[in-house]
Image: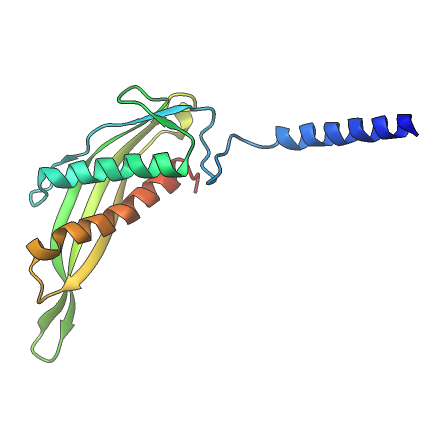
Length: 171
């Protein structure tokens, strides 16, 4: 009987080891880090004419915060195993909806585009350079100055999640 129990335990252990060989390195949120332990995020410089310096700072911090929340990677100021850099290349307001027969704007749209360079020192083949774009609508009766910070926060939430999914989510 004792021999049967020992054999069963060895078979179970072998099955667990074999099953784990097929797995990559994943975090609790599904981030595939491919052996990386650290990450760094360079300041995203706003080069779009209408984007102020605070837009770059807010995006940079939002990306850093999201990666810390959704992965086990440790943030370092520079030279991380995984590196993010880029620029805010688009920041513009346009009309998104027209009302009535007078063709008067009822909704405006703030659109932000971010060019991202992603580098992975452990797996260089995973590196990419890509532009991500998101927007948020606001009533045409509102002044952009009054709603801009809220809109930027909303857009940053969407953009940073998309960057995360493309880089660490392996989507």
